[in-house]
Image (tube, rainbow, N blue to C red; front, side):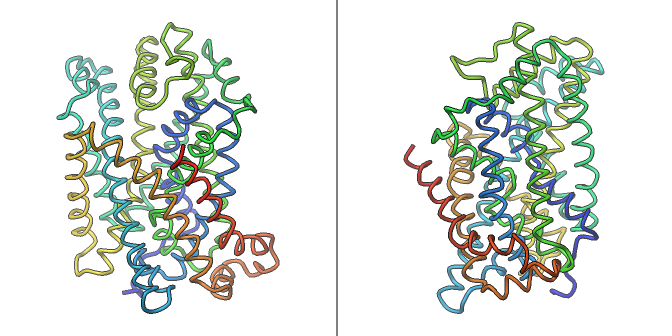
Length: 449
């Protein structure tokens, strides 16, 4: 089975797929709302530091393990672990990562469905279907289930087509389109009245907030969730990567592009909030900027509506951007359990994709029905607790289960002179001790906040 394993066709194909996985709602929604909720530019500065100090080393751990083992996360962690109890624990860790990935996709599908609903509403407004636009723009159980179902079908259809013909092909289309829309929207918003005030809030840090515990925890969570870390997504993508590729360079590029898109998303949404304020729309809740769903589904739609015909066009572009960002991430998350099923069961990829996708969608329906009880709980357990803990585990697997010679051989296959590089002088020790301790310290702080 390993001999027939698919690979990304090129470095660019992998970069687009991996960056597409990283660039999702965590960037386009999560980063700007976390920025609004944590003091603007102070959060931006801390996020960039933690993205390279914590997220990049953890990303490298996943890529190294994935390419070395060329397997799903359960098999990968078992392959590099010692026989006996070590392999049993590795199997449990891998299975837990798959459960976390599936749970993330449960709520992610629901949120992506909201974006799709607002996109359909904007299109209906543009073509004069006012009643239908109102229905899609109004929160309801049936609307949420319908739009989440449509989004789930798109996700499964891409993954069922395979690595090259599905994931790589669609990432290569969606990510450039996403970036083009994002840049076009920024160019428009920055020339509107009020945008300069938003730029000041976004780019001038309040240094007194840099070490606030809540800001540090939010920045770490944002970095891990944004880069799809701690659930095996990048490990599985790494397993489809050619042995000729330079892992440290590729990991740095994925991290840098992810940070860039997050920054650009903030450059769009924070100034847009102050443009909305200029038009009489409330953007503060008490002393803090409005964040979360209220920002995306109240402040910005009110801004679009106040802009007349131009607002309809911008609304379509904005929610198309959000929907594409969601899809590039959802296909990578679904690939985690699908990879296990394809490698460990007789199911074909299409059958495994549709079966697993259907099971996850049932979870999405349950979260929709019992939203007040389940949604916040699932988000907290997966992103605030499970992802950092699995991030620690994957760093420890790379740093301790794989010996130094194995790590060197794996990285050297695509980087001949790696042993003389700054990366090799720092990363093996860093991923063994420093990175797990820093993640653990931030995690413990989040638990006792």
